[in-house]
Image (cartoon, rainbow, N blue to C red; front, top):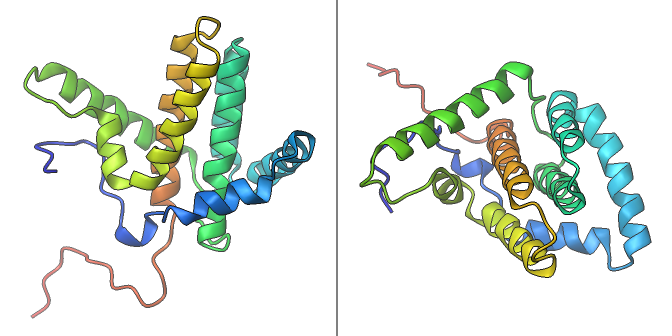
Length: 193
Protein backbone atom coordinates (compact mmCIF):
# COMPACT_ATOMS: atom_id res chain seq x y z
CA UNK A 1 0.00 0.00 0.00
CA UNK A 2 1.33 3.42 -0.91
CA UNK A 3 1.14 6.11 1.73
CA UNK A 4 0.89 9.62 0.33
CA UNK A 5 2.55 11.33 3.24
CA UNK A 6 3.88 10.28 6.60
CA UNK A 7 5.78 12.04 9.35
CA UNK A 8 6.90 8.66 10.68
CA UNK A 9 10.37 7.60 9.54
CA UNK A 10 10.58 4.25 7.76
CA UNK A 11 11.85 1.25 9.70
CA UNK A 12 14.88 -0.41 8.06
CA UNK A 13 14.23 -3.95 6.81
CA UNK A 14 16.83 -5.37 9.21
CA UNK A 15 14.83 -3.95 12.16
CA UNK A 16 11.52 -5.57 11.20
CA UNK A 17 10.61 -8.40 13.54
CA UNK A 18 9.54 -11.80 12.19
CA UNK A 19 6.30 -13.36 13.51
CA UNK A 20 8.01 -16.27 15.27
CA UNK A 21 9.74 -13.99 17.77
CA UNK A 22 6.40 -13.39 19.53
CA UNK A 23 5.72 -17.12 19.76
CA UNK A 24 9.14 -17.43 21.42
CA UNK A 25 8.29 -14.67 23.92
CA UNK A 26 4.93 -16.25 24.76
CA UNK A 27 6.59 -19.66 25.12
CA UNK A 28 9.23 -18.14 27.43
CA UNK A 29 6.50 -16.59 29.57
CA UNK A 30 4.72 -19.96 29.78
CA UNK A 31 1.14 -20.77 30.67
CA UNK A 32 1.54 -20.70 34.46
CA UNK A 33 0.20 -17.28 35.46
CA UNK A 34 2.33 -16.95 38.61
CA UNK A 35 5.52 -17.96 36.78
CA UNK A 36 4.71 -15.59 33.91
CA UNK A 37 4.13 -12.75 36.36
CA UNK A 38 7.52 -13.43 37.98
CA UNK A 39 9.24 -13.56 34.59
CA UNK A 40 7.60 -10.25 33.59
CA UNK A 41 8.77 -8.68 36.86
CA UNK A 42 12.34 -9.85 36.19
CA UNK A 43 12.08 -8.66 32.58
CA UNK A 44 10.94 -5.22 33.77
CA UNK A 45 14.03 -4.96 35.98
CA UNK A 46 16.22 -5.78 32.96
CA UNK A 47 14.21 -3.34 30.83
CA UNK A 48 14.79 -0.58 33.40
CA UNK A 49 18.54 -1.21 33.40
CA UNK A 50 18.96 -1.62 29.62
CA UNK A 51 16.46 0.98 28.36
CA UNK A 52 16.02 3.31 31.33
CA UNK A 53 14.50 6.25 29.43
CA UNK A 54 11.90 4.14 27.65
CA UNK A 55 11.12 2.14 30.81
CA UNK A 56 10.65 5.39 32.75
CA UNK A 57 8.32 6.79 30.08
CA UNK A 58 6.25 3.61 30.12
CA UNK A 59 6.27 3.39 33.92
CA UNK A 60 5.08 7.01 34.18
CA UNK A 61 2.23 6.36 31.73
CA UNK A 62 1.19 3.23 33.61
CA UNK A 63 1.18 5.19 36.88
CA UNK A 64 -1.11 7.88 35.41
CA UNK A 65 -4.02 5.52 34.77
CA UNK A 66 -6.25 3.85 37.31
CA UNK A 67 -7.83 1.36 34.90
CA UNK A 68 -6.51 -2.07 35.84
CA UNK A 69 -7.09 -3.56 32.38
CA UNK A 70 -5.17 -0.73 30.69
CA UNK A 71 -2.34 -1.06 33.22
CA UNK A 72 -2.07 -4.85 32.80
CA UNK A 73 -2.30 -4.60 29.01
CA UNK A 74 0.26 -1.78 28.78
CA UNK A 75 2.66 -3.56 31.13
CA UNK A 76 2.40 -6.87 29.28
CA UNK A 77 2.66 -5.38 25.78
CA UNK A 78 5.54 -3.05 26.66
CA UNK A 79 7.58 -5.91 28.08
CA UNK A 80 6.65 -8.48 25.42
CA UNK A 81 7.63 -6.06 22.66
CA UNK A 82 10.92 -5.13 24.31
CA UNK A 83 11.68 -8.82 24.90
CA UNK A 84 10.90 -9.58 21.25
CA UNK A 85 13.31 -6.89 20.04
CA UNK A 86 15.99 -7.89 22.56
CA UNK A 87 15.72 -11.61 21.75
CA UNK A 88 15.62 -11.06 18.00
CA UNK A 89 18.83 -9.02 18.08
CA UNK A 90 20.50 -10.93 20.94
CA UNK A 91 20.32 -7.85 23.15
CA UNK A 92 22.22 -5.60 20.74
CA UNK A 93 19.80 -2.68 20.79
CA UNK A 94 21.21 0.82 21.07
CA UNK A 95 20.25 2.67 24.23
CA UNK A 96 17.23 4.88 23.60
CA UNK A 97 17.70 8.49 24.70
CA UNK A 98 15.17 11.06 25.89
CA UNK A 99 15.65 12.89 22.59
CA UNK A 100 14.89 9.71 20.63
CA UNK A 101 11.65 9.04 22.53
CA UNK A 102 10.56 12.67 22.25
CA UNK A 103 11.25 12.74 18.51
CA UNK A 104 9.17 9.58 18.00
CA UNK A 105 6.32 11.08 20.06
CA UNK A 106 6.49 14.30 18.05
CA UNK A 107 6.60 12.44 14.72
CA UNK A 108 3.59 10.35 15.71
CA UNK A 109 1.67 13.45 16.86
CA UNK A 110 2.52 15.26 13.61
CA UNK A 111 1.49 12.24 11.55
CA UNK A 112 -1.84 12.08 13.41
CA UNK A 113 -2.34 15.81 12.82
CA UNK A 114 -1.57 15.51 9.09
CA UNK A 115 -3.95 12.60 8.68
CA UNK A 116 -6.68 14.30 10.72
CA UNK A 117 -6.46 17.43 8.57
CA UNK A 118 -6.94 15.51 5.30
CA UNK A 119 -10.49 14.13 4.98
CA UNK A 120 -9.40 12.06 1.97
CA UNK A 121 -6.71 10.28 3.99
CA UNK A 122 -7.88 6.72 4.59
CA UNK A 123 -4.81 5.53 6.45
CA UNK A 124 -4.38 6.12 10.18
CA UNK A 125 -1.02 6.56 11.88
CA UNK A 126 -1.22 3.13 13.47
CA UNK A 127 -1.70 1.72 9.95
CA UNK A 128 1.59 3.36 8.97
CA UNK A 129 3.30 1.75 11.97
CA UNK A 130 1.69 -1.57 10.98
CA UNK A 131 3.20 -1.23 7.50
CA UNK A 132 6.62 -0.73 9.10
CA UNK A 133 6.29 -3.48 11.74
CA UNK A 134 3.38 -5.70 10.60
CA UNK A 135 4.03 -8.63 12.94
CA UNK A 136 4.48 -6.40 15.98
CA UNK A 137 1.21 -4.55 15.37
CA UNK A 138 -0.55 -7.83 14.65
CA UNK A 139 0.56 -9.08 18.09
CA UNK A 140 -0.47 -5.80 19.74
CA UNK A 141 -3.88 -5.68 18.06
CA UNK A 142 -4.63 -9.31 18.97
CA UNK A 143 -4.00 -8.60 22.65
CA UNK A 144 -5.85 -5.27 22.69
CA UNK A 145 -8.90 -6.81 21.00
CA UNK A 146 -8.85 -9.79 23.37
CA UNK A 147 -8.62 -7.54 26.44
CA UNK A 148 -11.47 -5.33 25.23
CA UNK A 149 -13.61 -8.36 24.42
CA UNK A 150 -13.03 -10.08 27.77
CA UNK A 151 -13.58 -6.88 29.78
CA UNK A 152 -16.36 -5.32 27.69
CA UNK A 153 -18.28 -2.71 29.66
CA UNK A 154 -15.78 -2.62 32.53
CA UNK A 155 -12.74 -1.12 30.83
CA UNK A 156 -11.87 2.53 30.27
CA UNK A 157 -11.46 2.54 26.49
CA UNK A 158 -9.69 5.92 26.61
CA UNK A 159 -7.09 4.48 29.01
CA UNK A 160 -6.57 1.48 26.71
CA UNK A 161 -6.20 3.85 23.74
CA UNK A 162 -3.55 5.84 25.68
CA UNK A 163 -1.65 2.58 26.31
CA UNK A 164 -2.00 1.64 22.64
CA UNK A 165 -0.51 4.96 21.57
CA UNK A 166 2.32 4.53 24.10
CA UNK A 167 3.02 1.10 22.61
CA UNK A 168 3.20 2.64 19.12
CA UNK A 169 5.89 5.01 20.43
CA UNK A 170 7.76 2.08 21.98
CA UNK A 171 7.58 0.04 18.76
CA UNK A 172 9.03 2.88 16.70
CA UNK A 173 11.68 3.82 19.27
CA UNK A 174 12.87 0.21 19.53
CA UNK A 175 12.78 -0.18 15.74
CA UNK A 176 15.10 2.80 15.36
CA UNK A 177 17.36 1.43 18.13
CA UNK A 178 18.19 -1.71 16.15
CA UNK A 179 21.73 -1.34 14.81
CA UNK A 180 22.40 -2.54 11.28
CA UNK A 181 23.95 -5.99 10.98
CA UNK A 182 27.70 -6.04 10.41
CA UNK A 183 27.27 -7.00 6.76
CA UNK A 184 24.61 -4.38 5.97
CA UNK A 185 25.26 -1.42 3.74
CA UNK A 186 23.58 1.73 4.93
CA UNK A 187 22.35 4.25 2.38
CA UNK A 188 23.70 7.71 3.11
CA UNK A 189 22.26 9.98 0.47
CA UNK A 190 25.79 10.83 -0.66
CA UNK A 191 26.74 10.12 -4.23
CA UNK A 192 30.15 8.61 -4.81
CA UNK A 193 32.00 9.46 -7.98
